[in-house]
Length: 534
View: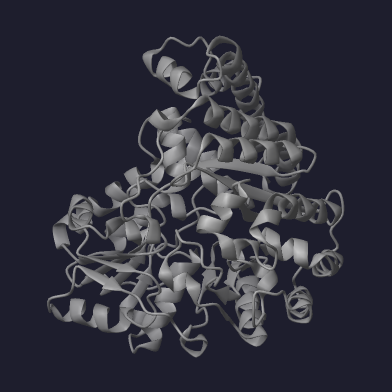
């Protein structure tokens, strides 16, 4: 524990929604996209999004992986550990003072306009938690009193490229893209009182300059590769350069997290392409990585963040070998995020040709089904996304996607439909998808996905519930809330189909006007709590 009565020169933090491990649930982090009021704040922040613990000096023992990389980059550039504190957002009064020169923020969705957030807020109404918590953070009394320079980066920094967006939040500088090469000089200028640019574009960081972790990460996230190289048009340019970290560096970061009590989750845009020199999976390299990580003393399980369906379909033997190494079975499964995006070969060829490789775009629907079969056979559970409203998407394209979802109903998985958000290479002249464009064909696709999720959600929840939730009260409450929520969604889908002619826009409008008679999930849960049924 350290003590700086005048505050720390550099304070790194994030909004409260990013300072939670969500009970170890891979998919529970999506709840940060929910609008405030969907679940009462005391329930949400205590049970769904419980805070990590803060030390007495305001620091945290685990933090988001991106923030830890910035911390390590600043230390490498010459700052001392005594200059920097990675702090809990609720403890800023302990760490910010007259000596504080820079407040560095890592954010995923600062304006609440990311695909998942936009989808939930348009359907449910209201403002998302992460946006509101960021506003609370920059308006904190200590920030307002001492006025440190606010520098914001992270996956959502692209949202603040416009000057008005930065000013609306009160950010002095936004760093877009990889930051390791730019944060040292930028923070030094800010520390010395020099003028700093309003926006800094990051640079692709060579492997030898990507710093290793100095302290543990949330949920034991360990970066194994950076970039993608598949060339989707809506992606940010820096993801085009694909690089893999050495196995020995990865194992060192795994060991560091183990000492903090965190089992590893391996992070990359596509974990299956670890070590690959081209788009093809290098089975020896990726299987060797998993064998090395699983073999570290103290490792009992290994998680992953993302994988590509084309990699799964092209390398079923690698998937099988990894499953054997991780000892997966019917009750022990591996979850990860992936992208289906569309069932239209035409749209794949237009925007995501590289996503299909080594297969052809015309094969995409069959490739997806083949990949889901491989995943099912080897106890991997995908949380897949669908993009609704890609520029130029036709009713025929939407129908193809709905047909593909039909073909996936037999596979244990989640399929999350998301509204297209104009970012990256597609933000010039393109418009984001919104509820006003929701035709009946789109509505059918949306409902189809959520019927699929209701079918499989209970079994997936139970697996997470047993492993992650140690608090019996929390487990019983969330189980109750989940059951109520599932019934409510089923009823809403029925009403939408039977009474609103499968018109999602109409039923959303009716809900906002108070014309729907579907009882609130949280209201019923609270009633049962009061009755003592919890």
